[in-house]
Image (cartoon, rainbow, N blue to C red; front, side, top):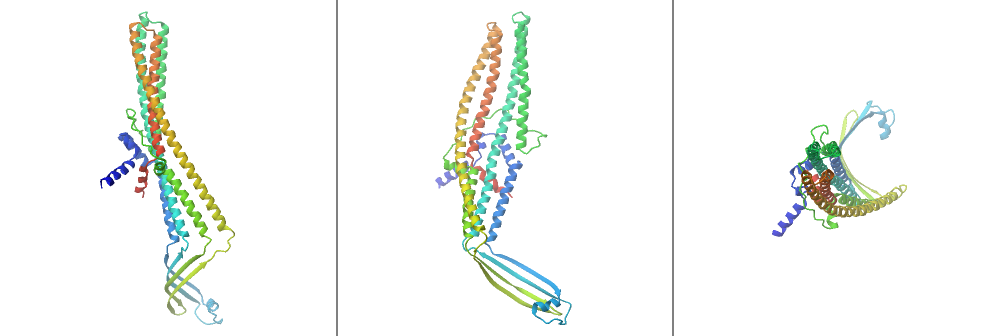
Length: 440
């Protein structure tokens, strides 16, 4: 019992969306909103439901049909002689009428399983369409998370540039005082003014990047880009743990695009089999029971019933059946090759994302070390300049290096998180299987 409970807990955890491990409620809410509201994702959901309905229609090929049919007609009485062999000129009314009401039943006996095979292929097509919807959801979740990270990084970049502009302004005041006191040259003053203007010129670009990221996120969430835009988070999230890569077999089960490719390959194989069975005879059964009547000056009616069958043996139809077999065999080969290519591409994407994530971790570590060294150098340079033991060029260089180091660490942190998102995207996830449960 305990073993079954542990297995259930593991399966439940495996189906949890990857972003829940980030412990960012705002990100979770945005992704859930996008998965519900994005029109591109909604269109694929509708296509999946359409394919499911088409698959259900395929059941009619091997199920009995039943209908109640009522028929009536009025004709000239003179035409009755032609139909029944009556002599011409027979006196009677100008018209006569006939009618019937019957319950009709029919069944195409699926002797060789051709119709059932076609229905099974249709169900696999529906499953593949659902897989396309799930694959787009994986991409949508990654896109929303990436846009959210871009807003956070852009907002942080704006804050860093504003802080650097404030530091440059304070340094300009110090240089101005030193210039007035005769301890700084006019060149030092002009260079610091240029440094302040250079930092200030980066602000519009940083704000434009923030606006662009907010607009992209709004479009992904199906919000009005001209309305209220999503607010950026105060900072980038804490780096979560990397996922367990598992095995290629796990990858085939977790990636919805691979499941869709497998379903299409199996459907193509079933259609090839159904095309082969089209060469075999077909058997049909029919039955009817009801009532029919004739009116010629008075009503005559009687009960009626029929039972019948038909057997069709294909002999020659211009080569259409054999051409269909060749077409389905080629389609099966195409789907099989596409499945092999998709599997190799999926493994390559996971390996590339894993390696990129590892390298981004090393890059972030180096960027952090560089930023710490730049902050220490700036502190020392500022103190030395205030004490008169360092020249202005050292201070200016330290300030420029500090801004570049902080921005470099910010970008490295964003790229590390982005690489982790790409790894989750490459791995897919069982969480997508619950997307179609609430579809109407």
